[in-house]
Length: 136
Image (cartoon, rainbow, N blue to C red; front, side):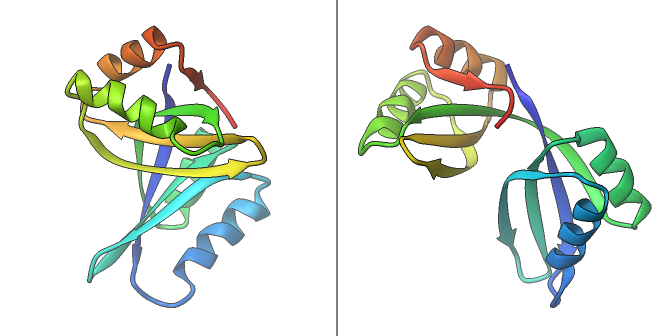
């Protein structure tokens, strides 16, 4: 089970992230999770949103470069070491994590993972009874 993540490529200049958030907000699209990565020339805003297709269309209409990527989202207990157990299982089966980001709410932590082998990753997570989620 995977979900779609938007990757929005942004120039490194003041206000570009805010432009994206304003556009999405104006159209009633909720950002469930996001991460910002940067290079010297541009940034990559990775987003999990409420309405993927609508967000892609709107952002492209506003001249943003947007790419869709499949990612795996899991929910685990928000306690010390719980993510380590899951990552150990993936490492044992030689799953490489290209990137990941997470956030916690109370006793639950939500983690977005981009593995090198997405279907194999999902199968391993299912076998270790990990809580894979399709939305936040």
